[in-house]
Length: 401
Image (tube, rainbow, N blue to C red; front, side, top):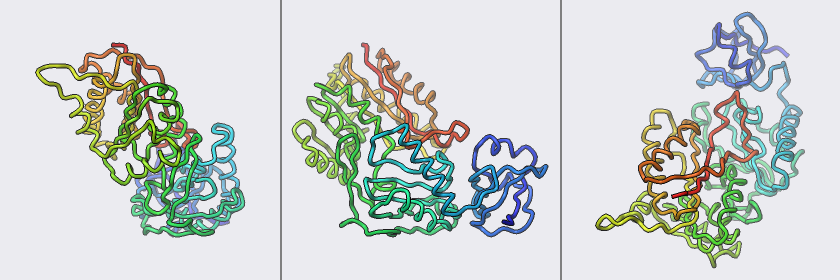
């Protein structure tokens, strides 16, 4: 197998040798021979020592996505081995789940590939040209390992444009369920999955374990679940025996879906859902008259907003948003109550998120105790030498006074 060689500039190899799969175009000294975009190439340091092999794309800032430190052949057998290793990891660390992320790109050493499993339907996303070129081998490996009823691609993500790829949403194997919808069971609750237009690949799976973990505080509680989306935290709290749960989201479509989920799971008796802007709702709920303090209403409040920032430049604005919702939520929390709060932005590390919460607690004149720390579910594995694989962090605090 003859491969073009990508030679790195002095000092640019260490990060790749340590395990990070991205080789930026600015790190490349030269190519030994011309390579076509999407080709498999070998990467060497400036002293001609082999670092690994991966997919090349001159049109992307990530010029090479390294797949392995050794010279390997990228074929269906390679994908079978790598996907089987990912499945083994999930069976060990997240046993018993029937809907989960099968492959999480860099976290499973397959940069540019995501595969989600919703019961017997698989959804594939390829965000690199190299992975796109090997889609048939990937589908072959998935069919052999998981025997799905259908494999669907949801390739409508913005990152594909940076690789020179067009959007593509097709059925790769089997047939799409009627209406483009299927279902997923998460911690014993049934959720509808929109395979055509749903967020991400149809549903968020990274909070699966956290839904149940936060619900342990819900028995007999009055609960507010903000940014509820499809009702994940709200419905698990209702199932856990909450006295009443309010789920709040600004998307009318999301709230309609959350209501359907409540009906399907027999939980309409102790939960309700409202369409509204969370910032405006919290502001109205904490308005005081003539200096009176807001009356605490909730025993458990959950803050799980979408990412407030997509880049480092917008971090200051994001922190102001996080501080505001924490400040107002603390005013609505009863003494002894629990505030569970999450941040899904890679650009806001856990320490900074915690500092922002503590600044809000100081301004609200509240004393809290940390009772739990949360992260993304194991099917979204974190590889420490690849910081981009860690993005979701959360805390639970008990309000002392």
